[in-house]
Length: 598
DNA sequence: ATAGGGTTAG
Image (cartoon, rainbow, N blue to C red; front, side, top):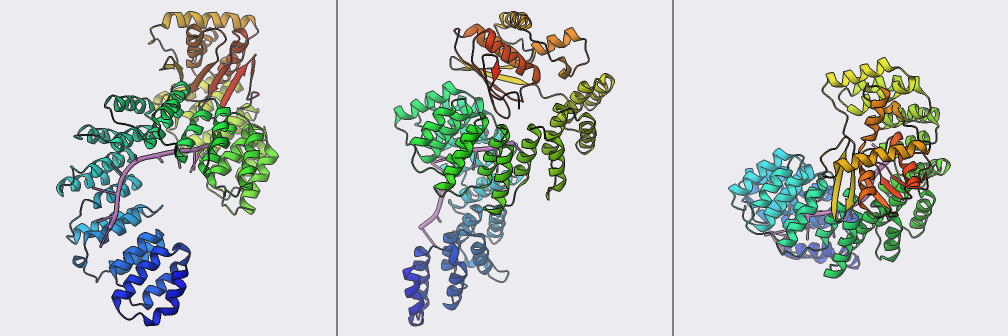
C-alpha cells in the first residue's frame, strides 16, 4: 500500500505510457487488490491505460474478482476492438480468471469461443483453463466438443491437457466412462493422472473402484502424494472402511507423505465417519493451521455420534478463536442440536446465525430446524415453522415432516401431505414407501396394497437396502435376501438362531413396515432377510467373541432392525456400531446411543 | 508472462 500512496503523489510526473504501464503493474503486484478495485480502476483510467491489454489482464488476474474481470474484459474485447490484435496470452488470462470464479465459469467458455472465432490460435496453456471451466459448468456435451477441439488443435498429447481432460469428464454428469477411456489411452501416467481418476471415482460414489485404482497405482510404481491420499481417504470415509483408513494413515507416515492441512482434514473426516470420533478429535487437537473445514468436519462428526453438547462447545470455541462460521458450519451445528434433542439451543443458534452473523438461512438450515422440531415430537410447531418459511419448500423437508407424522401419530395429516407430495413428485419411490407405512400404521391394509400396486404400475421399485461390513481387508456388501455369499447357508442358519434367541428374550418383530402384502409369518421372514441382519450374522460367524462389529447402511435403519440389534448386542455381548444414512448408532447391552430417536 | 489432481453439507 505504501507504493500506492507514493504513486498517487507522483502521478503527475509519470509522462510516458511505458512508465505508466510499469507503475500500474508494480502497483498491482503490491496491492491488496479486491477492496481497492474502484480506486485502481480510476487510476488506470487517469493514466490513460483503459485499453492497455497488459495492465487490464494483470488487473483481472490479480483481483480474481468478478467485477474486475468484467471491467477488464469489457475494454479488451469490446465489439469494436479487433481481436486479431490480441494473442493467446491475453485470452488465456481472461479465461483463467473466469474459470476460477464461483459463478461465472461459463464466461470463460464465451471468451474461448470469441478466441476461436477471431482466429486466435490456442496454445498449450489454453486448454487446461478451458477444460477446468467445462468441469465447473458440468456440461458433458460441452466437454465433448472441447475434447474435439483439443484433438483438432493438436494438444491431445500434452500431459497437462490429458490430466485436465480426465478431471473434466469426471466432473460432468455421466462422463466417468469417458474419463476412464481418456485415462486408459494415456501413454504414461503421473501422480496427477492417477489422482484425477481416483478422485473422480470418489466424487461419483464409486469408492470401491477408487480403492481398486489406488492399488493399481501402487502396482504401477507411481508414488502417491498428499493429494492422492486425500481422495483415497475420502473413499474410505464413504465405504466406512475403518481398517483400510487406518492402513492409509500408517502408509502416509511410512512413506513420509506431507501432512497438509487438507490431508489432516481428510483423516479427521475419515475417523469420525468410520466410527472413531475420539481419534478424530485427537488429530484435530494435534493439528496446526486448522481451517473452517477442519472445525466443521469434527463438529459434524460429533453430531453424527449424538454428542451434541460437545459439538456445540467446539463451535463456541471456534468462534472464540476468531474463525468465521460459514453456511456448512451452521448446518453441522444445527444438525448436532437436532440429533441430540437440543431444541432450545438449536432455536437460539438459528437466530444468532441471522442476527449476529448476518447469514441468510438457506433451505438446508430450514431443513435442520424442521428435522429438529420433528425429532422432538413438535409436529405442529414444525408445520407452523414451515408455513412461515420465506423460502420455497422442498420435498426433503416434506418427507421429514411426513416421517414425523407417522412416528408421532399424526396419521391423517401425514396422509394428506404425502398425497400432495405424490402429485408433485409422482416418480419418487420413497414417497410411496412413506404413504404405505402410514397406511400400515392406520391398519388400512387395502389402501396399503393399492399404494404398492401404484408403484408397480409405474415401474418403480423400492431402493434396495444394503449393508457393508469390512473384514480382513475385504469389504462385504449384503442386500436383502442376499444368497450370493459363499457362507450363505451358515448365515441363514445363524439368522434363524438369532431370531430364536431374540424371541426368548422378548423381541417382537415389527411387521407393520413390511411393504409386501403377505401373511404375518412371511413378513417375519422378510424382516429376517434384511441386509443388516445378514451382515450381523456374517460378523458373528467370522469374528472372535467380544469384538465390536461395525457396519454401514445405505438407508436409514428400519424400526425392526433397530430393535433387533439392541437385543443382539445384549444376547451376544457385542458392541455394534451402525452408520446409517444420517447418523451413528452405538448398540451396547441392549441399548442404543440414539436413545431411539433417529 | 499464462498449465494438471484435493476437503466440510439436511
